[in-house]
Image (cartoon, rainbow, N blue to C red; front, side, top):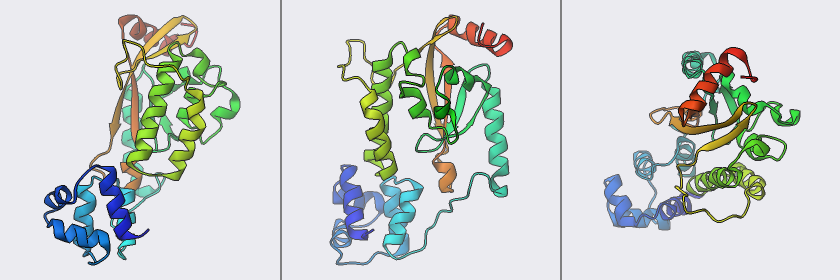
Length: 259
């Protein structure tokens, strides 16, 4: 990457002026201008401050450092490495504690990293190839041979998933994420939002063997992580949106899908 162009592109994508970025980073507009034009070379500390001021993901902060001629500052440790054993244990505890409700851990591209037993709810009826590791949960959710036929509010949910992925790709450019958006976008019906549309607050209405389940989602990220792998993990927990759903999920956990 070219540092000057990358800095300018990231600042523009966040709709910050040079002055606004300078104030955040504790420098002058003139210095930011010189950095973006290539007239000045940044110090390592300045690159880190600029990356933090732009709220770049750790992966991109490393990239910005490399483009300026410095070594990456943040490690990227494989999740199965011995050093992350305590993290894996903690994630397992969190997932299991969320039962009887589904919960999953995914990476930034939607690849399934971990799940509790409740995730079986989303696997029912899916084509075997969609369940072959590595499972992409967004593909599983929207593919015609995956979860999609069982989603009551399919158009609304598909648009919700695709728009969130598209926003992530715009915020933090990533060719792999762009390809995923291009793949999944045709699965989102071109239907305008209805009068009750609430943007991000889209429940998942799912057909199950005992009727309809209404679920809402919460997303937890490891915002203070100093490791790229951990910073890119997302814990997605599904919660019942009504008492009937809560009761049915509790019964399923004991007796299985026929509940």
